[in-house]
Length: 414
Image: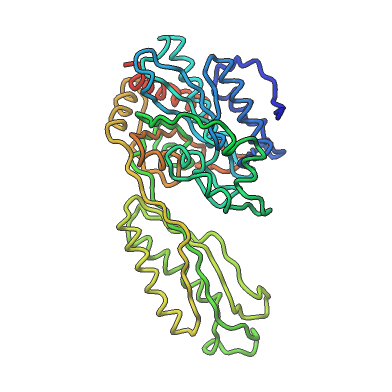
């Protein structure tokens, strides 16, 4: 299969140059990027990155699901692998930095280390992970999940996108799947990821680097309310079985409970629908989403118990209520020794830093339960992400690369 890729001279010296080049694969008129798993834009980007890796002297190869690796072989302990990188996929009309910066920073850091110190003692694998966002198929972390054994190819037969295309079919159409010669798997000695923060903490606190201690757990629910549709003018308020009203009360209830539980706890109702959705008819049915996040499972458990208590209010209004939990991702504490090393590195470089908790999911969340893992952040302007307006200053991108160089040197050269 011939993959057309954008020509480049590969003489990139800055993260911005490389990010602009990569953003052309799936670029939109609004200035955003859409690279959904196994789409044409995704495929072109991965093959372009493979050519770039080969041009830089790396041993580049794909695994069965389309994760791309660029290897710099260690000369003393080649079997010991330090893995670094991030994901290449995006949300629909997302930003240029999310995921892509981690790949670009790794490529530049490893190239500079090689130019300064030659080959590493231990092998460095730069990875462009196939998927993290869950934007096309109803699953997340397909790339890192494959590497760590969380997913297998059999599962791909039963997962479909909105057009009814299975993950297995899309994967095989893109040239991957079981027919590909399996790549030798080596459990990494460590995984290091650098990412834009996608939040406002570093910018507001005027810090250059975020050192992530925990990644929050996530629980997602769909909540159904079923009352009775009736005339908006002739049904007294006291006699209504109003599903919309109960959903509104539920939203206030859970928001108050979340605030009272812990200052780090967040709960969001981001999607809602009512039926019949007419201005002069009482809503007989309503449905909404709920996204709850915290870094402590016991706190998530307590919140979940509070949710169930609201069902008594539903019964009092003669409205049936059903709470369906469809996602439960456990919190992850990242490696303390690697975090301490990052703090020393920031001090040595004279960079201001802050220990932070990640409220967004990252591939480090999957690797964190598999091998020692470090996640670093650089600031995001106004905290904007998953948007064409996503932006990080060039000087902050460069500081992140310097941090990554220091950590990769400590892990692979020292």
